[in-house]
Length: 239
Image (cartoon, rainbow, N blue to C red; front, side, top):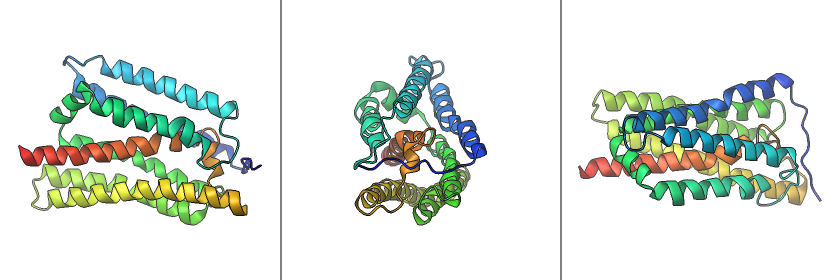
């Protein structure tokens, strides 16, 4: 039976992560607030914040009670957090009236701006530097997130400036960001399987609080945002 290895991480790194991790939730929350203010859905912000608080509480409860401790394939954090959150996003929220309302009303630039929270990917690199994640995996995943976040700034500027290449740049950026998160998901699961079979380093640290928030929240949210950008672009082309 395999269990999580508690890698020796400096206290400042966990503190820095706890300070940084609320920002993705705040950015998404403020986005929803802005897009629904003075509309029939003006209570969506409060409901979203309540959901985020409950979801984060559930992640913390599960982690502190050892739900993610056993190294398994698929990882427990994926089964208990990532997949349920993905189902909520794609099957419930993604088919709701409020989502359709926001998608029709929102500008493409504002959807793209949300990806600035992927600067949080720097923690993949930091964890690798402290030998808590496989370096190749962490550097590729972390660098991809950082490039996507920084790239969003240039894509937004190109759209706002009505550059002739703006649509093409947006499509390339959206595909790159999607491939990056898909790589992260697939590679993390492959490394988990190899860790169980061979004892090599896996991504066990991503099952330990507070870092378990990354796989529990980021993959579904990022994929959902990329899908929404794709849908918004298709909608704009028809109108």
